[in-house]
Structures are given as structure tokens and as C-alpha cells.
Image 1 (cartoon, helix red, strand yellow):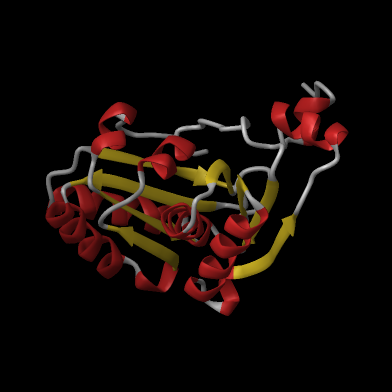
Image 2 (spheres, helix red, strand yellow):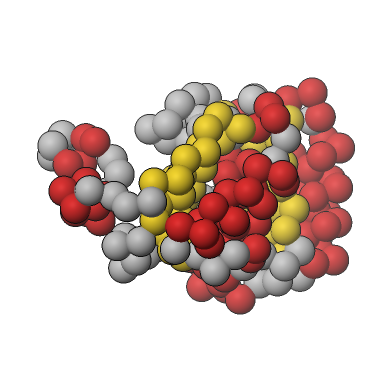
Length: 207
């Protein structure tokens, strides 16, 4: 997903708050990340470049500390800030998905696809969907290999997946959205492919 400066993935799983900032300038992103870690005591900090030439800063910790760090990050280089998200009660399944965990056990049901224009919107969509409906968060993919976009996949019953995407549609701004789709029943051949990976090059064993 991104390069990391300091990492403790396991601690992020139990942290009550998460924030992510996306910058159009790598220099500005590093400057803002530095201001954030100097402002507050954080349990987790991931920072690095993603396609197409953007910089992400992901922090985790107590609500008060993350909120304080976020203020510093937002104030440092506002002209280079593309978007950001602050989740004071981030769902554990979102954190697991950000760590690369995929849940493909429920692909016999409906598949919901949310495509966003940037990374913060995808994380927001994932959190809103899994909190708002009885769905499984199957996968979250961010930026690299997507031209900076985000993809979030949910599985569950048709009604629950539709409910999740309706909640997400109401939560995201118009300029954050690319497309949302509900597929009531994936063809078994496609379901088998997606259980393995959604990355085309990986399927063909591109080196």
C-alpha cells in the first residue's frame, strides 16, 4: 500500500483512532508528517509515496493524540492537501484490510464495489459500509496500480450490500466518487479469479 517510516501494525489493530492525509506534493507530505509526529504522541505512523506521485500519511493512536497531530498536518501544507479522513472509532475490519487482509469466504453472495477518486475516500467508504450494514469487508486497495484511485469490495446478501452502498453514497462527496456497483451473484468463474487476487498482472505472473 505504502512505504513506512515507523510501523507497528499490530498496535494499529487495537487503536481507537485513525487519520490519513493525501498530498499532491511529496515534499509537502514529508514536511506535514514531521509536524504531526512532533505535535503528538502516536502509536502508529506510516508515510510514503503512492502512484501517481502522491504522498500518504497514516497515523493511529488515542483519539486526542491523533486529532492533535491531524491539526498540525492540515496546517502545514494546505495548498498540497488533496483530501484527508479522521476516524475516531475506526472499525477493526478496516484496519485489517489496510494491513492487506482479504476476506473471500462470502463470495457466494452479492458483491458490492465502491470505486473512489482518492485514498481517504476509499477508507471512509470502507468504514461507513462495514459499520452501517451486515456486510463483510472483502478487500481495500489503494492508489498503487489504480492511478491513485481506491477500490473497496463488500460481500453479503443483496439487501445488505445495497444498504451499505447507499450509506456510502450519502457519506461521500460527489467529487470523491467514481462508481458504485452491486452484483447480486458473481459467475463462479469470476468468483474463483477474485478469490485469488484482483490484480491482473498477478494472475498472469507478470514479473
